[in-house]
Image (cartoon, rainbow, N blue to C red):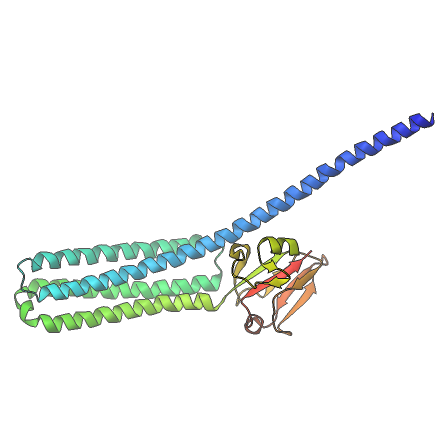
Length: 290
């Protein structure tokens, strides 16, 4: 009888033990899904910002090509070659095509900004203000190109004698237009860069696997996985939920500029009281959680 009871107890223990791997596998699968979802969000933000900056660069390149073509028009207009009229018309046609392309790029970028969900409001406003300035530049340039085309048609016989002064004037106008466009784009880039920061949360094991934590040191080498970090606008993001009951900042940030507080679920939340001071030492924040 004792043997029967012992056998029944062993059988019951085996059945209960079999359930543990199932629960453990389900928890692990949930963690992997959560990590994959976070990576997709990070990648989406980076892709959208990269697409915006790429389009801005294309617009700037379009302005540069337009200015070069304007310079060629002026040079050809004072040359003595018999084919100068054809060359001038070809350059004028190129300018009009490039301006059309720039308008389309600006329109597409405006639509992209309307559709994006991950770019913050102030960053959107900065880029939209830049686009508005570029549209003004486009309209001003269109007026100048139209006037130049009419002038070339009316005064073609006299351009050979007046070419030097017209060339200098057109070059100055092109340089001013180029400078204004470049300044607008440069200001937008600088605004983004000056207010961009990155943060990463993870266990020490996770941070080591991303080469963020190495031999006890954080971010000591440049080969860490930058895609593991979340990009933020430091003016906008002053509260970062850490979603953990244990949290420790591994990067250096001035005391008094931040605080670790617990939410209603007894999990830590990082509050940044003074963003400029907090990010003054490093634009990278690494937090070890459990």
